[in-house]
Amino acid sequence: MNNETATPVLEVKHLKKVFGKNEVLKDINEQVSNGQVICLIGPSGAGKSTFLRCLNMLDQPTSGEVLFEGQDLTKLDDKQLDKTRENMGMVFQSFNLFPHKTVIENIKLAPVKVKGEDDATATATAEKLLKQVGLENKADAFPASLSGGQQQRVAIARALAMNPKVMLFDEPTSALDPEMVGEVLKVMQDLASEGMTMVVVTHEMGFARNVADKVWFMADGYIQESAEPKTFFEHPETDRAKDFLAKILEA
Image 1 (cartoon, rainbow, N blue to C red):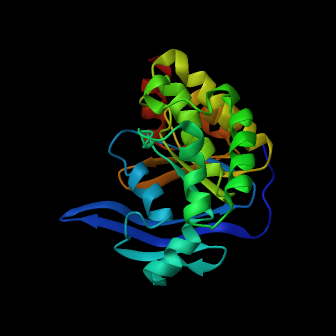
Image 2: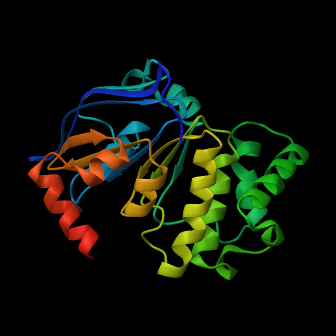
């Protein structure tokens, strides 16, 4: 786990998101420091994934500011936003790998197409990342031949290939069989120990307890508690959090 530094790399101010008559996010104000690991937890339908998608503007906030290194993303045009997104890796529940490309081709694609890296540099980076996620022997395999856990590790390597400053994870283990969850969490834990700034939407309470610097508990469109894991899990303040923990830790 990492200590906070003074300057937030990500900050949201008065963030709101409305779908029709449904106010999904209600005046959220939070910040993420460089090197910090945030785990965002809470009941289904709380707005966690919407919040995460607002951080890199995949969902456009209805109002408020989303600051990345002090720059308000809500005020950028599409070209500026694409450039900024290069610094924000995103890993989804579904792996979104190109089925007709090999593992190494999937990882090299964005650095070559978006950043203009030469093939040799992109290949060297991809090979290094595959070793990092424990899949160096799968470079020439196609995604369909991999397990779900292996595909998700490739998806993480693909996001890392852009050398992002922040990694956003949207329930990265929720689509996996239970025995594959650990291999993905291990990669994420290694990233955290190396100092990667991470915001993780997760139902994996063990990961949140052991790896996060801060737990954000979201329910009913608000972040209702923000605390260090030990404090949150042992002494939750709100009835909503107490009820959530009682249900999820009994399961």
